[in-house]
Structure formats: C-alpha cells, structure tokens
Length: 348
Image 1 (cartoon, one colour):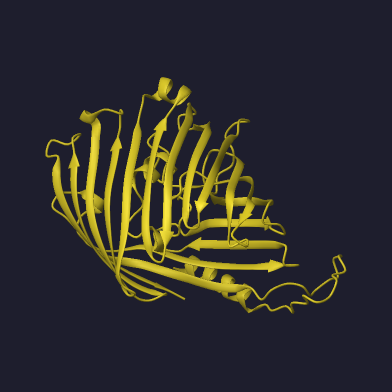
Image 2 (image 1 turned 120 degrees about the horizontal axis):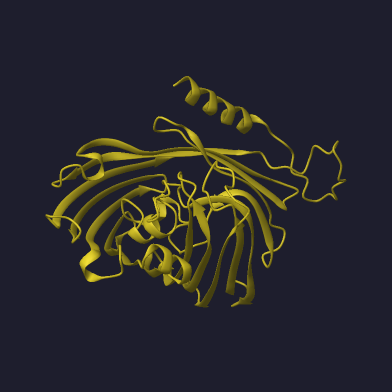
C-alpha cells in the first residue's frame, strides 16, 4: 500500500506543475526555455464488479473483483512533442503500463519511442472503455500479447520500441484521411523488460478508410520471444479486419493466424471475432459478440464464446455493463458453461 501511495503522490505532483502555452510566439530552443509546455493532464479510471461462472475456477472463481485501476499523466511541449505516463495500481505489483514521447508535428508522419500498445489488430490499441464488452477478444489475448498462446504473461498488448505512423491522402475537406500506416521495431519481451537477444520484432499495419468511419486493415508481426527457459520461440502472425464506428453504431470483425516460422515451430493457431454495437438510446447500447480461438486451427481445438452485453452509459465518465456469456470449449471435458459479468466503469 505504501508503494501505491508513493506512485500516486508522484503523479499528483506532476499534475500540479503548470506552464504557459505561448502559441503566438516563436520558441527559442534551449535548456533555459520554460514556456511552450501545456499544463500536464492528470486522470485515471477504475473498472470493477462481479463475475459468476458455472465452471469451477473460471476467471478466478465467482466473486467481486477489481479489474483495473489506472492513473496517467500526459501533456505536450512546443505543441509538437507529446508524452504520457500510465500506471496500473491494482494487484500485488503496481507497475508502469505506458511511458512514451512522440514527435507529432505532422499528421502524415510522427515518431513515438518508449513503451506502448503494439500496432497489431484494431482492438488491441483500444482503451478498455471502447471495447464494448467486459474483456478483449480471444484474438487479442492469445495473438496480440495479453496472455500470449506461446506462454508470455499478460503484457497488456504492449512492448518497448520505436514506431513511425501517419495519415495520408485527405478526403472530404480533410474530415478524414484515406490511408493510415504504422511501422514499429520492438524488443519482443513485453512491458518493463529488457531485450533478451539481439533480434527485434517488426510490427506494422496499413489501413484504408474508403468512407468516413469505415476502416479496412491488414496487420503483420514478425519476431520472436525468449521464454524463462531461454528458448527462442518465433512469433510470425498476420491479421485482417474491419472497424466501423459512426453515430454510435459499431461493427468490428478481425481474423488472425500464425504463419511461416511460428506455424512450423509451434503449430498452427487462429482466431476470429465479430462484434456489433447497436445504440437504442444515447445512454443505452447493446453489444453482440461471437469470439473464437482455435489452439491448433482445427474444429476439435476451438473455444467459442457468444455474448450479449448491455452498456448503460449515463455519462461519458460513468458506465455500467451487464454481460451474459455462453462458452463452448471443446478442449474441456464439459465444453459448455455460462458466465454473468456485471462491471462498473468510472474515470476522472
């Protein structure tokens, strides 16, 4: 608890610093320059609730839980450099989730260095508030680094590295861009860990937005991971999908599979999900989802989940979720089981 309070106090101290933005003046670069920096923004959110499953041991067993407590500080310097620090406070080991600096002067080209989300799949970079259901899909959990199928612990879909990205070809009076790209070089070991070899992971995406709000994308990942036994396991994956979000209507679908060296060394695997979000009221939205992971890319090794999740969004910073889940996991002796999740979301 003392460690948690110390980390929280440090963030509050950072948030207290202020600087004057001088947008109409020309900066004089140098170590004595004190202006041209935004006031750091301090915030956070809490996600918790109750989970029930009629399968013994699923999700840690039935009961009340705290899924996430996050605190963050972000801001900008010279309007061109953006930074963020995000901490996760719940659990036995509070730790840093994100820390990065990004040069973002141009929409067409920016550079980010530090620790942040891997650019693999549409869903992985999303904030938990925006996913729409109680947790990320099997695809993200097993194929994007949130409890990887190769055995890597939950790294939150993050790694340490350097990434370039941008949006090209403005359309409709620059209200949206036709083409988006990201390309990153990462350690491959996940968050808060040094690289374990000289190799680096290459992760990238190309996305097309033919109409405003509809994105079609392909994602690639080529790298490896060194486990606790010092064995090097290849991670070579590809994903494709679509993401539509207009006027609070949502449709998201993605497929990912192991390819090349990973498929040969560690066996095949693939995953697929489809999520639809239907707004009935400004404060009420229903999500329907089909989620599947196939541990050996066969019907006999499939884990399917069908869920319906009601979101009661009373305020942009207050949300309640009630989700029913039906599982069919052919890897279990009793494949069918049910779950009920009630989650509360609050942020500041």
